[in-house]
Image (tube, rainbow, N blue to C red; front, top):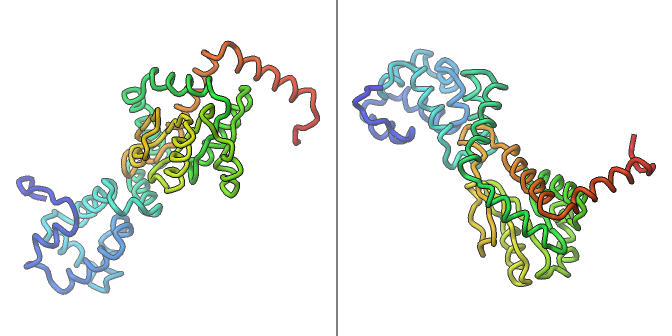
Amino acid sequence: MDKHDPAPQALGDLISRHSTRLTDADTRLLDVLVQDPIRAAMDNGKDVSLRAGVHPASAVRLARRLGFKGYPEFRSFLQANLMVGGEDFESPAARMAARLVRAEEGGLLASVLDSEIAALNNVRNSVSDADIRAFSERLCNSRRIFVFGRGHSSALSALITLRLVRSGYDAVNLGGQVDQLPEALSTFCKYDVLWLLTFRRTSPLVHELRRIAADRGAQTLALTDLHAARIDPAPEHQISISRGEPGESQSLVVPMTIANAVILDLAAIDDGRSIRALREFRSFKATSRLTVD
């Protein structure tokens, strides 16, 4: 595009700006692009023209009318808009398409690794040892720990609960027994801790669990990404982190790394409770016949 021409933020801006120059073929091409923005960012000009039923050179002419040097530059614009995000990123297909777009430049595995490394490096600047200690102190002083995560965070909920149980803590994975939440929480009290894991969106169920904890006087810890940061009422302690930019892999390594740090710090402050429990568990596991081949 002309470097003196301010860059539009969306395809709709381009269409409005150049509407008087567009032909019937342009309109057919734009209909195809607008109806499927994910595929539009992936296809070349020939493929788009074929789907629109116009001459293969029509896509190039459209790109030039919109101010681009050619269709590759226009396609890069569409890809950039996909990777910036927006409503399309509520769609898993859109998020995956954006990651594939990014991977075209340097390879799929390299792009995933770069995304994970960048997200982990951001944690250095956004989470402190004091944040980790606030979590571990509440866990250490609790009677029981209720861990809740759904969707992608359900895997972390199960793993965190497993590690806490092996460290000698009475932990319950609420994410694994959603149908029995009333039974699990019927004796919830001020001596317990609720640890919430929520990414992308905060579901009504998370808000209800937080409300119950507040009513019972229990402490709530929340590990969230930036898009799901708002919980009402606010938890006593919350760590909100970025799991990756739009168009990048939304890391589960980042929250798991923070959870691992919390559990490690817990072992540092609980007067040997975690270490003793781990030794006892290892001894029991070695002498029992409960291991599945």
